[in-house]
Amino acid sequence: MTPPSSHRQRPPVRATVLFLAYNQAAFVEQAARSVLEQACEPLEILLSDDASTDGTFDILQRLADAYAGPHFVRARRNEHNVGIGDHYNRLVQEAAGELLVTAAGDDVSVPHRVARLLAAWDAHAQRPDLIASHLVDMTYDGALRSTIEVDDLTRWPDAAAWAEKRPYIVGAGHAFTKRLWNLFGPMSSDIVYEDQVITLRAILAGGGITVAEPLVHYRRGGASALHTFESTAAFLHRTRLVNQRARAEQAQLLADARHTNREDTVRAGLQLHIQREALIAALLDACHPADTLRALTAASAVGWPWRLRKWLYLRCPGVGTGVRRLQYGLKQLRRGR
Image 1 (cartoon, helix red, strand yellow):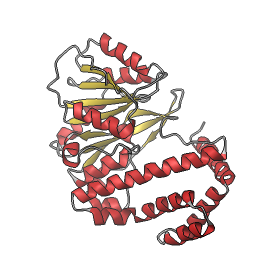
Image 2: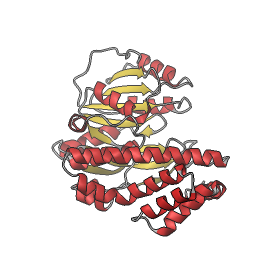
Image 3: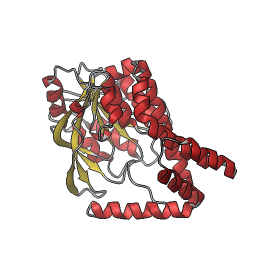
Image 4: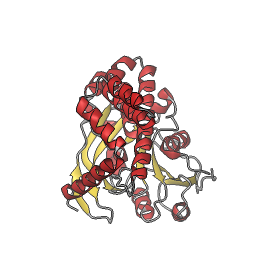
């Protein structure tokens, strides 16, 4: 890891912005400037690059070196690409603030974003461990569309509520407390979908709240983009990768629940998803018809139409590829593009 750049000593701040970037040179300056221009009490801002190959870090380093405002700014990068889970782990460990505000390298924070989050946190006596907010849908080229409304996290007071129905949240709009890492420890290095991990951790600890105001312009086409495929091999590769990531998330959720004696509750809520991902993994690895039949019959919590549809997609990847392309086209139409 490169040494951080800074003009001042480690700051006595309440909030740290965790700015995570990877190969986003086309957007990272605008995104970083939106963080540097926060109208707020002094913040610590960690401009962090996960070993990009496109010059992203050079841009962040230049911005940090030129910055002369009220915030404490450091640019840093990982020596090699570590992925979402370990990138978060490293930044949380380095952060001086207690409230940690997530910012992605291709999104734009409104100027009062952190001030609004801190005000909401203070209004609840700093008890919540997660503060979510609405977002604004932004096209890849920067046009602003409709508001993306996330769920009100006060409706999820405990693990039982989470197990009954997961809240709809978007990690790009999150702020969470450092004490969550002190309680649960680092996330697994396999974690790519951090949103639900952080959300469940908060629900198991001090709870969460939602600011009913769009504070982030959320760019389409990033890590959350819907993938299309040029070949059946690409479809199968992506299916296996998504399956591995989903199972890593499930393992992390169960481990965190176990830490607070809520594993049975969380496992019950995850049962359908656990069996679905186990079925996909078994179908991907099946070498003989008997293996396929065992996998299909073992997923007792999963409806037969879903089981057979997944079998068809993986047995005839061209069908799965075509369906995925159709889904992508319909999604683009719905979003007005």
